[in-house]
Image (cartoon, rainbow, N blue to C red; front, side, top):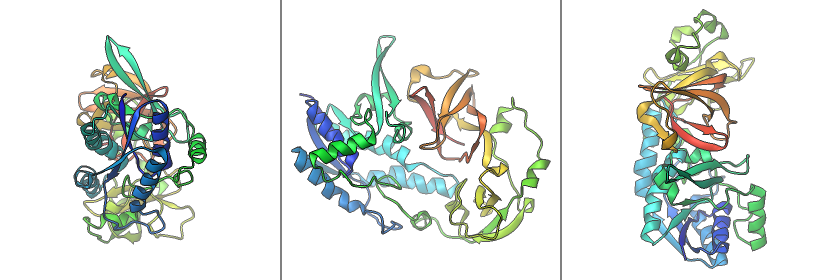
Length: 390
């Protein structure tokens, strides 16, 4: 009998995943990860993460499976949280959930599971895995989850073939209501529990408060850039990949000061909340930040020209292929479906492989392209690769 270690998180998805695996005849062991202890910045209305272990224990008892625990907080702090702080300090916006899956769940957690004698590890992610033969070699496809509202393949966009080999996603072919229904019928304590939100393993936080553990607050100017500014910018040639993919650079004299902030590194492109500037005909959105000068640039309205870009660059060192057999060669171009954030509808785009990296040009300009986030590209419903936006 093959042994599967399930990451029991105290949520409904991993609970049902464990049940389904048991029904399929696997020997199932639950393994609870403790990855964070600090409650700085945690919003009190949110369920505290120390309740999660209690729910995991209740589920394990109900399903009659053993439950082990592992503390990976040191590794999580070094490989996810430190990276997060460093990126924000540089004026970039990281995605800790993507990092958590690559560095913790399918690396450190996988090692802990293998030490328990596991043949596979399983999680409650809404995605699917398929095995195909490519030139006589087993190759793993990472497919979108069947529930379009819950597809989480984007969060796994940095997984390797080696990591996918050991991974199982039991709820990936189900819809979320079906998962809740199974949990209710089984009488699982997690059946009606809300899905976790916020930073992976930390929870929903007041981000500036959380970041102020290491990043000092510092007053700076909020500069509003008017729409008229863009009429003086020359139209970019659609064949000029560098120009299309380079963000506009602003100076304080390009607009007017409309307020103050407590640190440019606390803000991200497209952000509306937290500016505390009123009196404008349309809401203000962050269009750029300058952490060197500690300036936040804003523009009025969701369709402000400063929010829209037609291209981006992923440097060579940050390119990752989930399917290495489909890797583009230098000077090769190909059309894919691309998303630049979780839950964003897939966008038609072309990937251009160059020596310095991959340029992605979109058929329709995209709102809020943000350095530090991940772009992931798909063919139909298969995730082919991803990379960090420069």
